[in-house]
Amino acid sequence: MNIKDLVPTPELRRARNVLVIFPHPDDAELVAGGTVALLTGEGATVTYAPVTDGGMGSFDPRASREEVSRLRRKEQAEAAGILGVSHIEWLGFEDGRVPEPETLRKSMVSLIRRVRPDFVITLDPWLPYEAHPDHRRTAMAAVEACLFAPLPLAYPEDLDKGFLPWQVTGIALALSTHPNTFINIEKTWDKKIQAILCHRSQFPEEVWNTFFPYILAKSQEYGKEIGAKVAEVFKVLSPTHLHVMVDTWRV
View 1 (tube, rainbow, N blue to C red):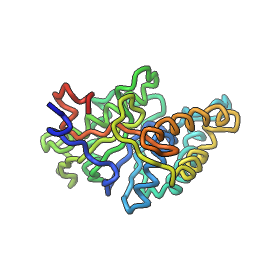
View 2 (cartoon, rainbow, N blue to C red):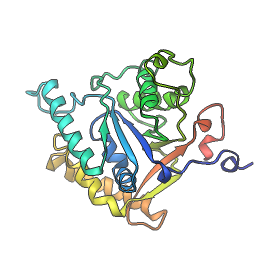
View 3 (cartoon, one colour):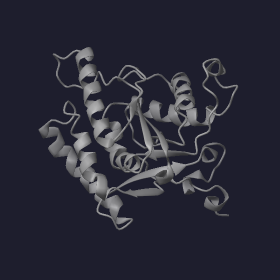
């Protein structure tokens, strides 16, 4: 039995309306900036959904959460513009205090029903050794929301607001240890880096000089798999793969 023949893997590059759900400002650019730029460059509409305000993202003890949050919203808007992202939907949860998926899921279901994306890009909630609860909870709530969004009896109050049930075609999980989709980002590599560097509060020179070699090395490693200089990778699944299917890890 070949699971790929029975349940085909959706093609991310064919997506025309994409919702990117991520925990903090800068996460989307780090894991999917090149792919986002490719998609928008090919006419796709991309909506960003940062779950938190990023207000904990500072090593300056004199800074307030409010100041950091305002700065990071500005940085995120600048980065999104470089990549051609048309809209940002801030979910508004406190950085470092993202609720459990069961609580967070409702907001994401409503968002999916409003945006009506064919693809959702988020993080892989099954990444080993991920210590940040915002990452784990955001990612798990996002994949759960993709399952719940088409069910009219899940959060039926959305119907009163005009948010009708919606089935996504595919879910692309970034930061996955079992990727099945490699995207050549040679043409958009410079935009990806430029967008990341908009997050100046997170990547001062000393941090960037330490972090960039890893980003470059992993991108080159992924690129070799498809004969490219650099690539981004995802575990791309359909909603069918995400429920009672023991072979999903093989996809």
